[in-house]
Length: 76
Image (tube, rainbow, N blue to C red; front, side):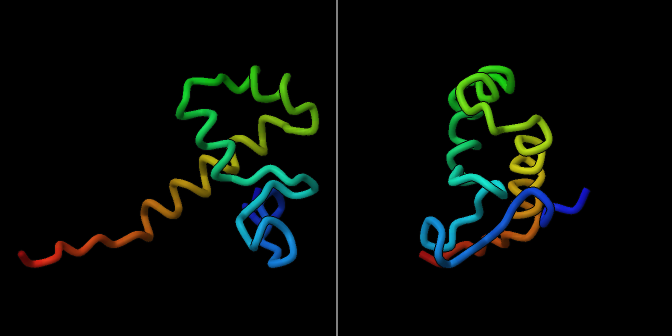
């Protein structure tokens, strides 16, 4: 499933941050909760509109960004 079916960017919503379609849940928020140790089941229980596919889309989006990000060392 293409990310655009789950993740949207709308300048009118959360200052243009990527969010899960049909919600005001930012991708970064879901990733922070996962990084803090919350399970998929806990997330879906706490946010009933959230589906497993939404969580996987957030992880896929983060993976895409990690592949695209280029870090260049700054000379001392």
